[in-house]
Image (tube, rainbow, N blue to C red; front, side, top):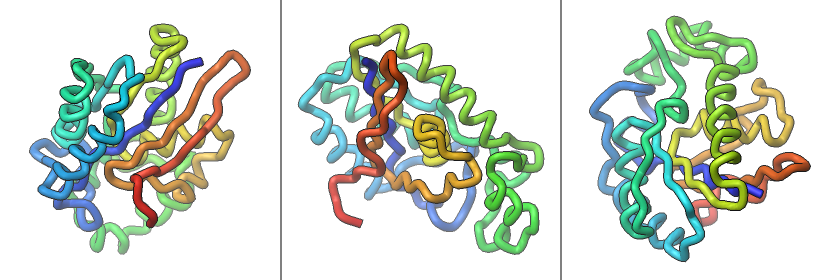
Length: 199
């Protein structure tokens, strides 16, 4: 049985006001650094065999303290990167809320495509490819994937058999850990959006 720790990156200054996607130069802020250090302490008891990170700065900066605490190297994987936002990259949320395509995409995540960007099904598919590959490499191990909210929610939907149109019902807060396993009989979700704090 392979165990997956699905970890969202720490806080950054754009959260809640701007869609950054794959925009370069987005770093975790002071709160994000504190979250990453606390997360490293929470996961320090070990048992993690590998740490993978999206290539974006905010995920690498979250993964590095965990890897350092556990004496592991961070493996960078583009496939677990953020949803490609195409024409919406860098746009303020207040502006997007007026866009009918934004409303349509959020209502029908299972079939909606961002202009010049990805579908959630494509995100789910690339996440699943990595999860299955890791199952082969760490059949009885634990792997941490430091990634982004939408990829985490997409793979959790797959594991739970939930349509992607309902993805907004799953929360993946900054520096949260969701835990799932994959065994011969299938997946099991053990924990979601665990930050060590009550909401």
